[in-house]
Image 1 (cartoon, rainbow over the protein chains, first blue to last red):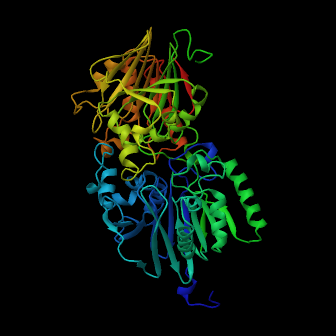
Image 2: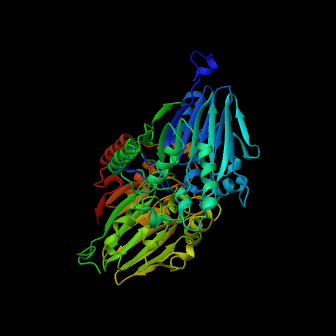
Image 3: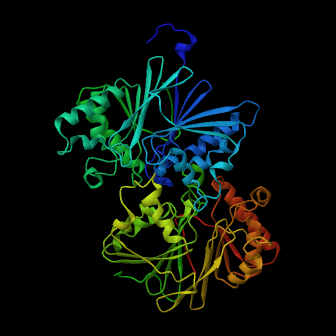
Length: 303
Length: 293
């Protein structure tokens, strides 16, 4: 870390959780603390606005930025990176207020490894049978890109990505780097599958090596830990990771803080508090000082 | 079967599991009236349980049915297939239960809408389970578009076409001398584009014990939202008064509407009703609440 850097060196990435819940929104008293909106995380560096996934949480993000910055002469630019296009990760998009502002510009990045083009998936979501407003009726400029280059540069921020192996239909993990700091967003992946007997030792090691290399030394790893160890066997194949597997991999990769994400819709706040306690014990027992928490809607961190 | 009858003495019961329109809105500002999208449970004579719409509220409703898992027989009526009315279906636990029969009817596109989240929508055909693999027996009754649907010995369900983009149905439940009308996603206006005017909805709701109606907007928002297929609460109030209903429940709350604003809307409606000298009872639908008719 720089001792006395330039202004640029001192820039931080501000991470805010707008939606932390997996699969489906879960409004109500039981989820007030950790939140009921589906995945959306914003990362802001100066005036660069990066958004990870567009679950229902993106609605509140849109309302906040709309009040602050849009509708003036200046163009507001947003860069939205989609982990994949399962409904819980894109359903908030039509409710992202800046899309209805002519001064907004949104670039959507997603995997090209799909049977259908990203733009047609997003158009399908707003198909007239299911949603009354079409994608072409939006006032904002929308630029939908299937990622082709290894690295995307947004000012001083570098974004690189990797396809994840274990999620029905596939998913992508992203890494945002700025001055040696790293944020990794790796949700909707079933890392438990690595330990299935059907996977050969060689294959397992190759997968592990690739995963660890990508998340290694992350200042924060935001990752899918939807299931408990007990729940996982019943949900094998659904594309999500169990908590102990995630914690152990994060320890192995020497992650600095692990934000467990994509909470199961059934999980109440009190249960997460208990899981948190157990998770901390697990880390302590392994002699590590990794910071561990369950992502809470509304929480902001500076990285 | 159930030890206790769902309802007795000719009564109907309605429970709200999702009251919100357009998109689920979790958070502190929606705790009282609820943040889940449309789902209403109607309990009738003869242990008949009808669910209206499969918005996100159908997930907790499904969990509540766990005690009936050994043998569950229910009806699911779909008003229309906009996302906020069908998205909860893959998260409705009973679809994965073997001894479960779900009898479906409603808008003519209802089966297409219920299939879509499984076979298509969760990206491009990769929800882990396919619609045809569901354990529950899912039967499409296909009755309502031809005429009334009769449930058991005493219940008749009728439909009315909605003023809503891409259309849809409102429902009327008649049981003995009790009438319940549920109309969501409907724009009450004098020049209805489907040939229906306020008069038709007044006639359909005439004398109902309970009218549950979409009232997503404020009167001052209507100009900007004309044609979106939702009503403002004053027009709904007026319709309820004209139809002489016993009780009016405002429904399909706008995602931006906070609990405190809904409290104000209800207070305004009550005041206006009083000024007009009616005894109409008025409330806004609250998630988790049960109303007896």
